Length: 291
Ligand SMILES: [Zn+2]
Image 1 (cartoon, rainbow, N blue to C red):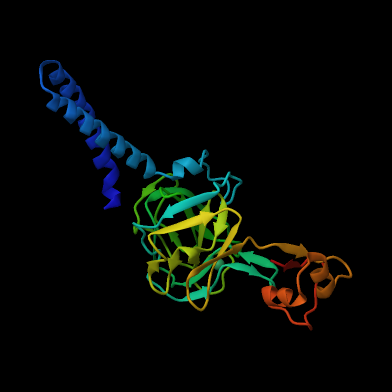
Image 2: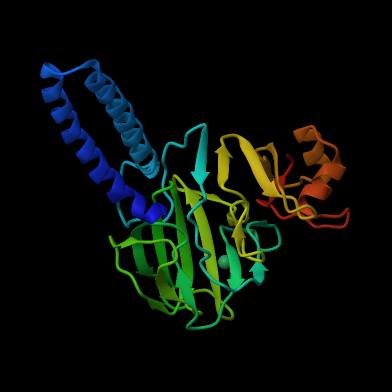
């Protein structure tokens, strides 16, 4: 429905604008009824134009259009509401093989979630939008063949480890439109889809918006709030909010109890947040979350 909305609005606005001119012509010779008509027209017109502006929240977030980088520095609003209606699931596969987040054992961040797909499976655009990047990071490197789409609702999605592209940079796409075929390119062991959701260049947990197991979105809207850390409660599956996580970088000679004292938190908090035990060995430079 949303897909058809823009052209309809544009033509309706034009019609109304021309109708307004006619109403004015009539107004000179005729009754207050025309005045009322003109009033209704202008309100309807204003609402339609406002609606039209709201249909492209991406315009508020991004000044630039370039295929240089997946992530970039941009001003994030204090809060931003992502309209998830009109979504399409990127794949019909439901098996999550890796989740989003920092992985202490590998000392790196996983910026997306992995969904099992087979080579040749159709990968679809999550929303209406425009293809920003179609690139290959090469054999055994990073994403392999990947696609980044900037969506009208403000978020960007990335699809990695693809075997074949079906779109080109700058192409407009509709939600559900096939954009690529699943694969095993790049740093990948076993074919899967690496899927990221980004807002103004910042990675958000895709599970805050997409539930691949249920093949659905988490709601009609997802609201991002600055300084608030949002994650999925594993038991309830609901979005829970807490303060943005904070990290301490381990320095030479520091133990967990020393770090706990420096950060002003009980050592048990460090165990819990980092899935560590009293027997865990720390490495210099390791990131320890303390909030
Ligand atoms: Zn991944």
